[in-house]
Structures are given as C-alpha cells and as structure tokens.
Image (cartoon, rainbow, N blue to C red; front, side):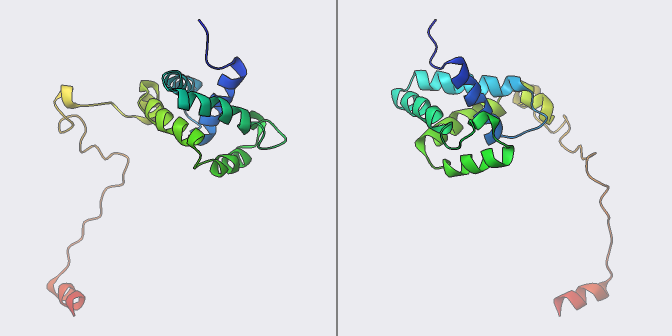
Length: 150
C-alpha cells in the first residue's frame, strides 16, 4: 500500500506535533495517531496534501539543524514563525481534534469521557473537588456590609 509520507517525513510530522502540543506526560502513541489523522486528511484533500508535503520539506530548511533536532525553545520559535501558514493551520485543525479525542490522552489527563450514556455527570463526580483545598467560609456582620457599600 503506497504511503503519502516517507518514514522520515512521518517522523518529522510527529516531532512537529510534539512541539506544537507539548505534553511531557503524553506517550508517543497519541502523537503518532494524530499524525496519521493528518495524513489521512491530506490523502482526501489534494490542497492539504500539497501543503503538507511542501510544508514538511520547508520546515527542515528553516534552520541549519533539522527541525527534529532543534532545542524545544527554538522549535517553538520556528512554529510561531509558521503559525499563520496554510500548512500549519491545516495540520493543527486536524491534529488538535485527533490528539485530544484520543482515549490514551483522556487516561493521562484523567478525563472519563462523555457521560451522556452513563446518566450524566451529576452522580459521577460532578462535585468531586478533592484537588482543591477546602473553601474558607466566613460570615460578616452588618458593619462590614455598611462599610463596603459606603
């Protein structure tokens, strides 16, 4: 089966996605699946396909060092420089949905997924605030209200 990208281009796309959506706790699988979603979208859209192939080729020419070997801070600078290009926005439009809709990402983030088919969130941790400190509740006398309204 012919593939749209070479192995090197696919690796570059994954590295681009890791730089664009940096999460130290995310494993590689979600980034690789998001890259595949971009490739699938490009295969169905000749314009995106051309932008993807040209954009990946241009990306490695942004600096003397290939994009995949750039320091994360420098990679972020490169991405900010191409942020408004059709190449980058086309990738991000597809990848953001694919990446954050990945159940492996949900597990990492602690998201349990949609609750509609389970009766909603009201009885499934809607008010679980164990990650926040207990609220400090104070009551004020009438004097403090009068001072605030004056």
